Length: 410
Image 1 (spheres, rainbow, N blue to C red):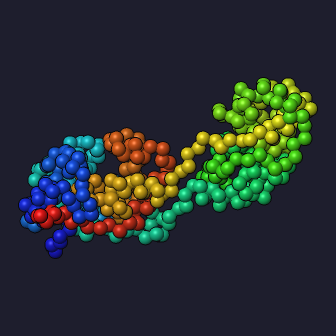
Image 2 (image 1 turned 90 degrees about the vertical axis):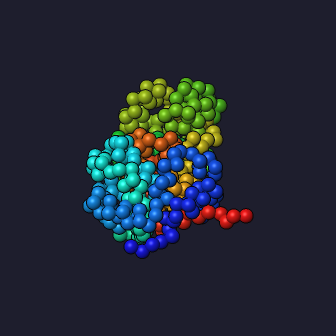
Image 3 (image 1 turned 90 degrees about the horizontal axis):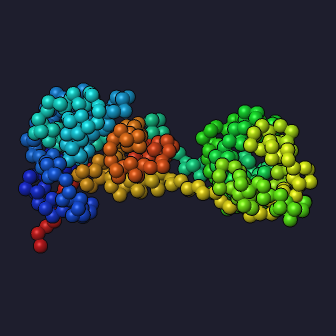
Protein backbone atom coordinates (compact mmCIF):
# COMPACT_ATOMS: atom_id res chain seq x y z
CA UNK A 1 0.00 0.00 0.00
CA UNK A 2 1.42 3.33 -0.99
CA UNK A 3 2.12 5.75 1.77
CA UNK A 4 0.71 9.24 1.54
CA UNK A 5 1.12 12.38 3.59
CA UNK A 6 -2.62 12.82 3.45
CA UNK A 7 -3.37 12.44 7.11
CA UNK A 8 -1.21 9.98 8.88
CA UNK A 9 2.15 11.11 10.19
CA UNK A 10 4.13 10.34 13.30
CA UNK A 11 2.49 10.59 16.69
CA UNK A 12 4.90 13.31 17.80
CA UNK A 13 4.23 15.38 14.69
CA UNK A 14 0.45 15.29 15.05
CA UNK A 15 0.62 15.91 18.78
CA UNK A 16 2.65 18.98 17.97
CA UNK A 17 -0.02 19.98 15.48
CA UNK A 18 -2.78 19.61 18.03
CA UNK A 19 -0.83 21.56 20.59
CA UNK A 20 -0.36 24.35 18.07
CA UNK A 21 -4.04 24.17 17.10
CA UNK A 22 -3.19 24.63 13.42
CA UNK A 23 -4.13 22.61 10.35
CA UNK A 24 -3.34 23.18 6.71
CA UNK A 25 -6.16 25.33 5.42
CA UNK A 26 -6.62 27.53 8.46
CA UNK A 27 -6.26 28.03 12.18
CA UNK A 28 -8.63 25.99 14.33
CA UNK A 29 -10.11 28.10 17.15
CA UNK A 30 -8.99 27.10 20.62
CA UNK A 31 -12.54 26.09 21.53
CA UNK A 32 -12.65 23.64 18.63
CA UNK A 33 -9.15 22.27 19.14
CA UNK A 34 -9.56 21.74 22.88
CA UNK A 35 -13.16 20.55 23.08
CA UNK A 36 -14.13 16.91 23.53
CA UNK A 37 -11.98 13.96 24.46
CA UNK A 38 -8.44 13.75 23.12
CA UNK A 39 -9.30 10.10 22.47
CA UNK A 40 -11.44 11.38 19.59
CA UNK A 41 -8.23 12.28 17.77
CA UNK A 42 -6.40 9.03 18.32
CA UNK A 43 -7.16 7.83 14.78
CA UNK A 44 -5.19 10.79 13.46
CA UNK A 45 -2.13 9.63 15.39
CA UNK A 46 -1.76 6.25 13.70
CA UNK A 47 1.55 4.94 12.35
CA UNK A 48 2.05 3.17 9.00
CA UNK A 49 2.00 -0.16 10.87
CA UNK A 50 -1.35 0.80 12.43
CA UNK A 51 -2.70 1.46 8.95
CA UNK A 52 -1.67 -1.96 7.73
CA UNK A 53 -3.38 -3.55 10.71
CA UNK A 54 -6.43 -1.38 10.04
CA UNK A 55 -6.59 -2.79 6.52
CA UNK A 56 -6.82 -6.29 7.97
CA UNK A 57 -9.69 -5.16 10.21
CA UNK A 58 -11.41 -3.64 7.18
CA UNK A 59 -11.05 -6.86 5.20
CA UNK A 60 -12.67 -8.86 8.00
CA UNK A 61 -15.40 -6.50 9.19
CA UNK A 62 -16.10 -3.70 6.71
CA UNK A 63 -15.25 -4.59 3.11
CA UNK A 64 -18.37 -6.67 2.48
CA UNK A 65 -20.47 -3.49 2.59
CA UNK A 66 -18.09 -0.56 2.13
CA UNK A 67 -15.51 -2.26 -0.05
CA UNK A 68 -11.83 -2.34 0.73
CA UNK A 69 -11.55 0.95 -1.17
CA UNK A 70 -14.21 2.57 1.07
CA UNK A 71 -16.47 3.55 -1.80
CA UNK A 72 -20.03 2.39 -1.28
CA UNK A 73 -21.68 0.81 -4.31
CA UNK A 74 -24.73 -0.66 -2.65
CA UNK A 75 -28.16 0.75 -3.40
CA UNK A 76 -28.66 0.86 0.37
CA UNK A 77 -28.54 4.52 1.46
CA UNK A 78 -26.91 3.40 4.73
CA UNK A 79 -23.68 2.70 2.83
CA UNK A 80 -21.75 5.97 2.55
CA UNK A 81 -18.40 6.51 0.91
CA UNK A 82 -15.85 6.44 3.73
CA UNK A 83 -12.64 6.57 1.71
CA UNK A 84 -10.57 9.61 2.62
CA UNK A 85 -12.95 10.56 5.42
CA UNK A 86 -11.46 12.41 8.38
CA UNK A 87 -10.01 9.74 10.72
CA UNK A 88 -11.15 11.22 14.02
CA UNK A 89 -14.68 11.53 12.64
CA UNK A 90 -14.68 7.90 11.51
CA UNK A 91 -13.40 6.78 14.90
CA UNK A 92 -16.06 8.73 16.78
CA UNK A 93 -18.85 7.46 14.53
CA UNK A 94 -17.71 3.85 14.95
CA UNK A 95 -17.90 4.29 18.70
CA UNK A 96 -21.44 5.69 18.38
CA UNK A 97 -22.51 2.65 16.37
CA UNK A 98 -20.77 0.35 18.85
CA UNK A 99 -22.96 1.57 21.72
CA UNK A 100 -26.13 1.53 19.60
CA UNK A 101 -26.38 5.28 19.21
CA UNK A 102 -27.50 5.08 15.58
CA UNK A 103 -29.99 2.26 15.88
CA UNK A 104 -28.42 0.60 12.83
CA UNK A 105 -28.34 -3.15 13.47
CA UNK A 106 -25.96 -4.20 10.64
CA UNK A 107 -23.40 -1.60 11.67
CA UNK A 108 -23.87 -2.33 15.36
CA UNK A 109 -23.19 -5.99 14.74
CA UNK A 110 -20.20 -5.29 12.51
CA UNK A 111 -18.36 -3.24 15.13
CA UNK A 112 -19.86 -4.61 18.34
CA UNK A 113 -16.91 -6.76 19.32
CA UNK A 114 -14.08 -4.68 17.85
CA UNK A 115 -11.61 -3.34 20.38
CA UNK A 116 -10.98 0.36 20.71
CA UNK A 117 -7.55 -0.21 19.19
CA UNK A 118 -9.17 -1.89 16.15
CA UNK A 119 -11.53 1.08 15.72
CA UNK A 120 -8.59 3.48 15.72
CA UNK A 121 -6.72 1.47 13.13
CA UNK A 122 -9.60 0.82 10.74
CA UNK A 123 -10.52 4.53 10.90
CA UNK A 124 -6.91 5.38 10.08
CA UNK A 125 -6.88 2.90 7.20
CA UNK A 126 -10.01 4.22 5.47
CA UNK A 127 -8.88 7.81 6.05
CA UNK A 128 -5.71 7.02 4.13
CA UNK A 129 -7.21 5.57 0.93
CA UNK A 130 -8.08 7.67 -2.10
CA UNK A 131 -11.49 9.37 -1.75
CA UNK A 132 -14.35 8.82 -4.20
CA UNK A 133 -14.49 10.77 -7.43
CA UNK A 134 -17.22 13.41 -7.69
CA UNK A 135 -20.50 12.39 -9.28
CA UNK A 136 -20.99 13.43 -12.89
CA UNK A 137 -23.43 16.24 -13.59
CA UNK A 138 -25.77 13.82 -15.32
CA UNK A 139 -26.40 10.10 -15.44
CA UNK A 140 -26.23 9.66 -11.66
CA UNK A 141 -28.73 9.74 -8.85
CA UNK A 142 -27.52 13.24 -8.13
CA UNK A 143 -28.67 14.36 -11.56
CA UNK A 144 -28.06 17.78 -13.07
CA UNK A 145 -28.19 20.86 -10.88
CA UNK A 146 -31.72 22.14 -10.52
CA UNK A 147 -32.74 25.82 -10.68
CA UNK A 148 -33.73 27.44 -7.42
CA UNK A 149 -37.51 27.66 -6.74
CA UNK A 150 -37.70 31.39 -7.52
CA UNK A 151 -36.00 31.04 -10.90
CA UNK A 152 -38.08 27.97 -11.66
CA UNK A 153 -41.22 29.88 -10.67
CA UNK A 154 -40.35 32.79 -12.94
CA UNK A 155 -39.82 30.44 -15.87
CA UNK A 156 -43.07 28.56 -15.22
CA UNK A 157 -45.00 31.83 -14.72
CA UNK A 158 -44.08 33.03 -18.20
CA UNK A 159 -47.15 31.20 -19.44
CA UNK A 160 -49.33 33.30 -17.14
CA UNK A 161 -48.02 36.67 -18.32
CA UNK A 162 -50.37 37.02 -21.29
CA UNK A 163 -53.37 37.34 -18.98
CA UNK A 164 -51.95 38.29 -15.57
CA UNK A 165 -48.95 40.44 -16.48
CA UNK A 166 -45.23 39.64 -16.27
CA UNK A 167 -45.09 40.16 -12.51
CA UNK A 168 -48.68 39.28 -11.71
CA UNK A 169 -50.09 42.82 -12.05
CA UNK A 170 -53.03 42.58 -14.41
CA UNK A 171 -53.70 45.10 -17.16
CA UNK A 172 -56.57 43.10 -18.68
CA UNK A 173 -60.05 43.68 -17.22
CA UNK A 174 -61.46 40.48 -15.79
CA UNK A 175 -58.04 38.95 -15.15
CA UNK A 176 -57.07 38.86 -11.47
CA UNK A 177 -53.97 40.36 -9.94
CA UNK A 178 -51.69 37.62 -8.61
CA UNK A 179 -49.37 39.79 -6.51
CA UNK A 180 -50.02 40.41 -2.83
CA UNK A 181 -51.54 36.95 -2.37
CA UNK A 182 -50.36 34.26 0.01
CA UNK A 183 -48.86 31.38 -1.99
CA UNK A 184 -51.11 28.86 -0.23
CA UNK A 185 -54.18 30.69 -1.50
CA UNK A 186 -52.88 30.81 -5.08
CA UNK A 187 -52.09 27.09 -4.99
CA UNK A 188 -55.54 26.26 -3.59
CA UNK A 189 -57.29 28.47 -6.18
CA UNK A 190 -55.45 26.92 -9.14
CA UNK A 191 -56.15 23.41 -7.84
CA UNK A 192 -59.83 24.36 -7.60
CA UNK A 193 -59.76 25.25 -11.30
CA UNK A 194 -57.99 21.98 -12.11
CA UNK A 195 -60.50 19.98 -10.09
CA UNK A 196 -63.56 21.78 -11.44
CA UNK A 197 -64.61 23.33 -8.13
CA UNK A 198 -64.14 26.69 -9.83
CA UNK A 199 -65.82 26.79 -13.22
CA UNK A 200 -63.63 28.22 -15.98
CA UNK A 201 -62.90 26.01 -18.95
CA UNK A 202 -60.02 28.13 -20.20
CA UNK A 203 -58.25 28.11 -16.82
CA UNK A 204 -58.87 24.39 -16.40
CA UNK A 205 -57.21 23.70 -19.74
CA UNK A 206 -54.29 26.05 -19.10
CA UNK A 207 -53.40 24.60 -15.70
CA UNK A 208 -54.18 20.96 -16.38
CA UNK A 209 -50.54 20.12 -17.15
CA UNK A 210 -49.01 22.20 -14.34
CA UNK A 211 -47.41 19.94 -11.72
CA UNK A 212 -47.71 20.58 -7.99
CA UNK A 213 -44.01 21.50 -7.81
CA UNK A 214 -44.38 24.00 -10.68
CA UNK A 215 -47.49 25.44 -9.05
CA UNK A 216 -45.67 25.93 -5.74
CA UNK A 217 -42.86 27.74 -7.55
CA UNK A 218 -45.26 29.95 -9.53
CA UNK A 219 -47.14 30.95 -6.37
CA UNK A 220 -43.84 31.74 -4.62
CA UNK A 221 -42.63 33.83 -7.57
CA UNK A 222 -45.76 36.02 -7.60
CA UNK A 223 -45.74 36.36 -3.79
CA UNK A 224 -42.23 37.83 -3.91
CA UNK A 225 -42.92 40.38 -6.65
CA UNK A 226 -43.31 44.07 -5.82
CA UNK A 227 -47.03 44.62 -5.18
CA UNK A 228 -49.07 46.96 -7.31
CA UNK A 229 -52.71 47.71 -8.09
CA UNK A 230 -54.32 46.22 -11.20
CA UNK A 231 -53.97 48.57 -14.17
CA UNK A 232 -57.63 48.23 -15.09
CA UNK A 233 -60.79 50.40 -14.79
CA UNK A 234 -62.60 50.43 -11.45
CA UNK A 235 -66.01 52.10 -11.86
CA UNK A 236 -68.09 52.50 -8.74
CA UNK A 237 -68.40 54.59 -5.59
CA UNK A 238 -65.25 54.05 -3.56
CA UNK A 239 -66.59 55.85 -0.49
CA UNK A 240 -69.67 53.66 -0.43
CA UNK A 241 -67.46 50.63 -1.02
CA UNK A 242 -65.28 51.56 1.96
CA UNK A 243 -68.34 51.66 4.22
CA UNK A 244 -69.55 48.30 2.94
CA UNK A 245 -66.04 46.81 3.36
CA UNK A 246 -66.24 47.16 7.16
CA UNK A 247 -68.16 43.87 7.21
CA UNK A 248 -65.39 42.17 5.18
CA UNK A 249 -62.43 43.33 7.29
CA UNK A 250 -62.75 40.52 9.82
CA UNK A 251 -61.59 38.00 7.21
CA UNK A 252 -59.93 40.06 4.48
CA UNK A 253 -58.23 42.68 6.65
CA UNK A 254 -58.30 46.45 6.77
CA UNK A 255 -58.06 47.88 3.27
CA UNK A 256 -58.27 44.34 1.91
CA UNK A 257 -54.83 43.29 3.19
CA UNK A 258 -55.42 39.90 4.78
CA UNK A 259 -53.37 38.61 7.67
CA UNK A 260 -55.14 35.24 7.82
CA UNK A 261 -56.12 32.48 5.43
CA UNK A 262 -58.61 34.57 3.44
CA UNK A 263 -57.22 36.14 0.25
CA UNK A 264 -56.12 39.75 0.16
CA UNK A 265 -58.40 41.94 -1.96
CA UNK A 266 -56.31 45.11 -2.11
CA UNK A 267 -55.42 46.15 -5.65
CA UNK A 268 -57.56 43.42 -7.19
CA UNK A 269 -59.04 43.89 -10.66
CA UNK A 270 -62.56 45.25 -10.19
CA UNK A 271 -64.20 43.24 -12.96
CA UNK A 272 -62.73 40.00 -11.62
CA UNK A 273 -63.92 40.89 -8.10
CA UNK A 274 -67.48 41.44 -9.35
CA UNK A 275 -67.47 38.15 -11.29
CA UNK A 276 -66.13 36.23 -8.28
CA UNK A 277 -68.79 37.65 -5.95
CA UNK A 278 -71.57 36.77 -8.39
CA UNK A 279 -70.17 33.25 -8.64
CA UNK A 280 -70.37 32.92 -4.87
CA UNK A 281 -73.94 34.21 -4.95
CA UNK A 282 -75.19 31.79 -7.61
CA UNK A 283 -73.19 28.82 -6.29
CA UNK A 284 -70.83 28.53 -9.26
CA UNK A 285 -68.08 28.81 -6.68
CA UNK A 286 -68.77 26.53 -3.75
CA UNK A 287 -67.20 28.26 -0.76
CA UNK A 288 -69.32 27.95 2.36
CA UNK A 289 -67.67 30.90 4.12
CA UNK A 290 -68.51 33.23 1.20
CA UNK A 291 -72.04 32.10 0.34
CA UNK A 292 -73.87 34.07 3.03
CA UNK A 293 -71.79 37.30 2.76
CA UNK A 294 -72.16 37.32 -1.03
CA UNK A 295 -75.91 36.72 -0.82
CA UNK A 296 -76.34 39.69 1.54
CA UNK A 297 -75.12 42.36 -0.91
CA UNK A 298 -76.75 43.64 -4.08
CA UNK A 299 -75.06 44.22 -7.41
CA UNK A 300 -74.55 47.93 -6.72
CA UNK A 301 -72.78 47.23 -3.43
CA UNK A 302 -70.58 44.62 -5.11
CA UNK A 303 -69.57 47.19 -7.73
CA UNK A 304 -68.71 49.73 -5.02
CA UNK A 305 -66.72 47.17 -3.05
CA UNK A 306 -64.81 46.30 -6.23
CA UNK A 307 -63.97 49.97 -6.82
CA UNK A 308 -62.80 50.44 -3.23
CA UNK A 309 -60.57 47.37 -3.11
CA UNK A 310 -59.14 47.97 -6.60
CA UNK A 311 -57.77 51.30 -5.38
CA UNK A 312 -56.11 49.99 -2.21
CA UNK A 313 -52.39 49.24 -2.33
CA UNK A 314 -51.65 45.55 -1.82
CA UNK A 315 -48.87 44.43 0.53
CA UNK A 316 -46.33 41.72 -0.06
CA UNK A 317 -47.24 38.63 1.99
CA UNK A 318 -44.85 37.43 4.66
CA UNK A 319 -42.93 34.85 2.67
CA UNK A 320 -39.28 33.93 3.15
CA UNK A 321 -37.23 34.13 0.00
CA UNK A 322 -35.68 30.69 -0.40
CA UNK A 323 -31.91 30.41 -0.47
CA UNK A 324 -30.32 28.92 -3.54
CA UNK A 325 -28.37 25.67 -3.28
CA UNK A 326 -25.15 27.68 -3.50
CA UNK A 327 -26.24 29.96 -0.66
CA UNK A 328 -27.25 26.99 1.49
CA UNK A 329 -23.93 25.28 0.75
CA UNK A 330 -22.02 28.36 1.89
CA UNK A 331 -23.64 27.94 5.32
CA UNK A 332 -22.74 24.25 5.41
CA UNK A 333 -19.16 24.98 4.37
CA UNK A 334 -18.60 26.90 7.60
CA UNK A 335 -18.28 23.57 9.42
CA UNK A 336 -17.68 21.08 6.63
CA UNK A 337 -15.05 23.06 4.75
CA UNK A 338 -15.04 24.78 1.38
CA UNK A 339 -16.69 22.49 -1.14
CA UNK A 340 -17.39 20.01 1.65
CA UNK A 341 -13.70 19.34 2.32
CA UNK A 342 -13.52 19.52 6.09
CA UNK A 343 -10.30 20.64 7.75
CA UNK A 344 -11.64 19.93 11.25
CA UNK A 345 -10.94 16.27 12.10
CA UNK A 346 -14.23 16.07 13.99
CA UNK A 347 -16.40 17.34 11.11
CA UNK A 348 -17.10 14.91 8.26
CA UNK A 349 -16.07 15.69 4.71
CA UNK A 350 -19.07 15.85 2.36
CA UNK A 351 -17.31 16.20 -0.99
CA UNK A 352 -18.01 13.34 -3.44
CA UNK A 353 -20.29 11.65 -0.91
CA UNK A 354 -23.25 9.68 -2.25
CA UNK A 355 -26.22 11.98 -2.83
CA UNK A 356 -28.77 9.42 -1.65
CA UNK A 357 -26.85 8.90 1.59
CA UNK A 358 -26.60 12.64 2.25
CA UNK A 359 -30.34 13.04 1.69
CA UNK A 360 -31.15 10.23 4.11
CA UNK A 361 -28.88 11.65 6.81
CA UNK A 362 -30.25 15.19 6.50
CA UNK A 363 -33.79 13.89 6.79
CA UNK A 364 -32.72 11.85 9.82
CA UNK A 365 -31.51 15.03 11.54
CA UNK A 366 -34.77 16.80 10.68
CA UNK A 367 -36.82 13.95 12.16
CA UNK A 368 -34.67 13.69 15.26
CA UNK A 369 -33.43 10.21 14.39
CA UNK A 370 -29.92 11.65 14.54
CA UNK A 371 -29.19 14.07 17.33
CA UNK A 372 -27.30 17.31 16.73
CA UNK A 373 -28.48 20.72 17.86
CA UNK A 374 -26.35 22.43 15.22
CA UNK A 375 -27.52 20.21 12.35
CA UNK A 376 -31.16 20.41 13.37
CA UNK A 377 -30.96 24.21 13.42
CA UNK A 378 -29.16 24.38 10.06
CA UNK A 379 -31.77 22.16 8.39
CA UNK A 380 -34.78 23.85 9.96
CA UNK A 381 -37.24 25.01 7.33
CA UNK A 382 -35.55 23.23 4.42
CA UNK A 383 -37.84 21.31 2.12
CA UNK A 384 -37.23 18.15 0.15
CA UNK A 385 -36.05 20.14 -2.88
CA UNK A 386 -33.51 22.05 -0.75
CA UNK A 387 -32.09 18.85 0.68
CA UNK A 388 -32.00 17.16 -2.70
CA UNK A 389 -30.14 20.16 -4.12
CA UNK A 390 -27.58 20.18 -1.31
CA UNK A 391 -26.96 16.45 -1.63
CA UNK A 392 -26.46 16.74 -5.38
CA UNK A 393 -24.15 19.74 -4.90
CA UNK A 394 -21.81 17.96 -2.51
CA UNK A 395 -21.82 14.73 -4.49
CA UNK A 396 -20.30 16.71 -7.39
CA UNK A 397 -17.52 18.33 -5.38
CA UNK A 398 -13.98 17.03 -5.69
CA UNK A 399 -12.81 15.34 -2.50
CA UNK A 400 -9.41 16.58 -1.36
CA UNK A 401 -6.90 15.14 1.02
CA UNK A 402 -6.05 17.00 4.21
CA UNK A 403 -2.57 17.19 5.69
CA UNK A 404 -2.17 17.96 9.38
CA UNK A 405 1.11 19.70 10.01
CA UNK A 406 2.66 21.78 12.81
CA UNK A 407 3.70 25.39 12.66
CA UNK A 408 7.44 25.83 12.32
CA UNK A 409 9.08 26.88 15.56
CA UNK A 410 9.80 30.57 15.88
